[in-house]
Image (cartoon, rainbow, N blue to C red; front, side, top):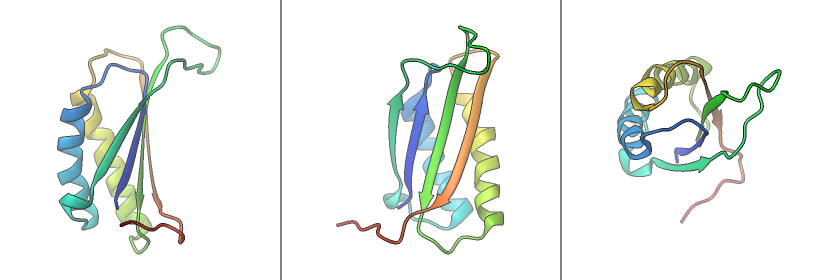
Length: 110
């Protein structure tokens, strides 16, 4: 924990983003740095609204053990939205989104 997944179709400095994101998560929701794990999934095709061909997205999902307040999760979402543009290699028109949620009760790790 935290389990972080980044779906992206925009050019993104993945390693740089992850290395900046992890300390931000630690500071904002009181996690430990060694617990942060980020995986990236490149999206081959994106269709937004009317299907313009220039649409690109980055969606970040952060799953945490339960116990964080909705306010803390919202602060983290906002902070990630502000961090992302520094690591994008694309201009205008990138659609950014972030979801911070609780892990399911069945989550286990070794």
